Length: 348
Image 1 (tube, one colour):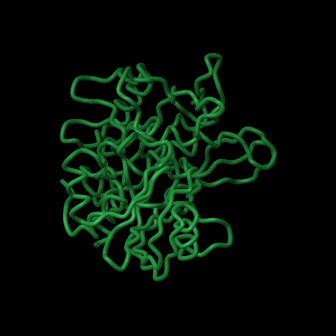
Image 2 (image 1 turned 135 degrees about the vertical axis):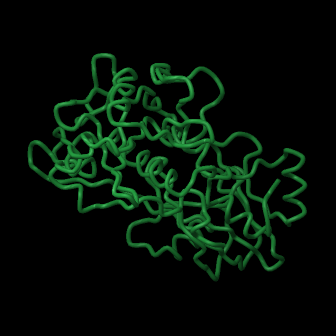
């Protein structure tokens, strides 16, 4: 498997980290007609037909963001419970990088309106596809004809390298700002710095940076060349995927693979080989993909993370997908790439 061929793994733009400090480059970019801006909110970006990320001029982006509800710097809640931000700081602008011709790429955050999950609902409910129904953020529809809000999950596999890099970075940063408005040391408000890449506590001046949570994801294959797939408790009926889990403190990636498979499926894993990685900003993961060789085959779901686990031959998986009994991982995911590498081609 070619890691660069994975959806959302492509290099995209030059991040130009040296331009972030001080805010001068951000202000200069806003005044430059060559600058292009994407709008981002709650895991979605504005797209045009194609799909393509809609790259707007700064003034147009500011106008549309103002119509839809602008996000800025402090992440505090307004009287209606929605995110209210202070335009006096940076107005919700993020410096993403620059292109080959030196043009700047920015993101403009738009206030998120979707409420946090109620008590008792898994915290990752927001990363799963939203059931069909009314848009939970109707004010985000204030867009001209030809533009629409599109969740990154729905289009990641279709984007060019540059668009994927821009959208993934914007979604990840937007999610971090929304979830970390206050200092973890003292609880005081934080302000945005370094063109959207840092938050600084207004009380103790401590600096805080976007987090990335490493997670392993693995195609477990046995001696008969069968693949082990699982059905997670919170998934829709019929959805199956590779096993995955977060890396714990003090743990190597290889140990995390073996531990997660043993915990979730009761299978002992031996050899582990790296296959590729994918940034997964839902909300802040880096998925690190592996092929793992099973030394035992007695698979049983833990009943907590997974409700079912099953070994599949290629023929069994192909038949189940065609019949609609198995819904495979989405095409924008590294899970799909790992399964299709084992399968030997696309799953229809």
